[in-house]
Length: 135
Length: 86
Image 1 (cartoon, rainbow over the protein chains, first blue to last red):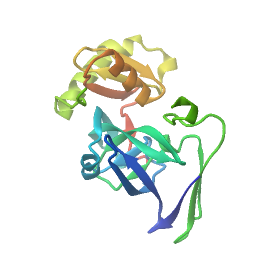
Image 2: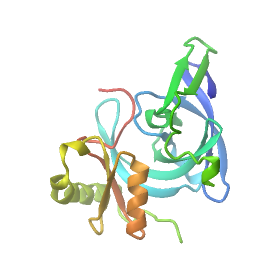
Image 3: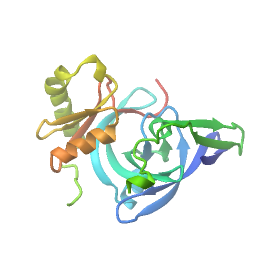
Image 4: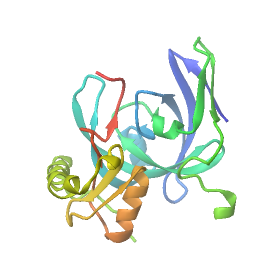
C-alpha cells in the first residue's frame, strides 16, 4: 500500500525514483487521474537522475492544445517494489498518472491533511514489477 | 552500450514518425489494435505494437540498435493526455 496526504487540494504521495548508476531521488508527486501515462517529471529532475531517453511523442494538454515531449525510462519504487516505467518530461510538478495506478484502488479523504491510500486490487502484479523469483 | 540519445528535433521526430505511421503502420493494423501503442523507429521504419508502451519500445530496441522511437497510441491523436479533457 502507498499512502499520502491531501495538501492544497492536491492528493500527494512521496515516491522514490531511480535512474542508472544508483542515482535516486525521493520526490513529492501529485496524483492526477486526468493524466494517462505513468509518471511525469520536470526537466531538472530528469537531468539530475540521468534518465535514459527512450522516445518522443505528442501529448494533449487540458486546454486541448498539443505538445511534443520526450519519454525516458526509469524505475520507481511502487508499493515496496521496484517497477520499470516510462517517464514523460514535462514542465510540471511531478505527476502520478493512471498507468502507474493501474491495478490499484485509489482512496482520497478529500479534506486538508486527509489520508490518501493506494492499494493493490489483487490478481497479477502490475507491469514492470520484478518479483523475487524473477531475479 | 552507450544510452540512446535523440538525434533529431522533436518536430522532426513528429514529422517523420507521423509520415511512417500513416504510410506503413496504419494500413497494417486492424480494429483490434485500437488503443495499443506503436513504437516506430523513424530511421528504419521498423515498428512494434503492444498494449504496453514500454514493452513496445523494449521489443523494438531489441531488434533495432540505437533506435529513434516515435511513440503513437493507435486510433488517437496523442500518446498521453496531461490534465482533464478540454
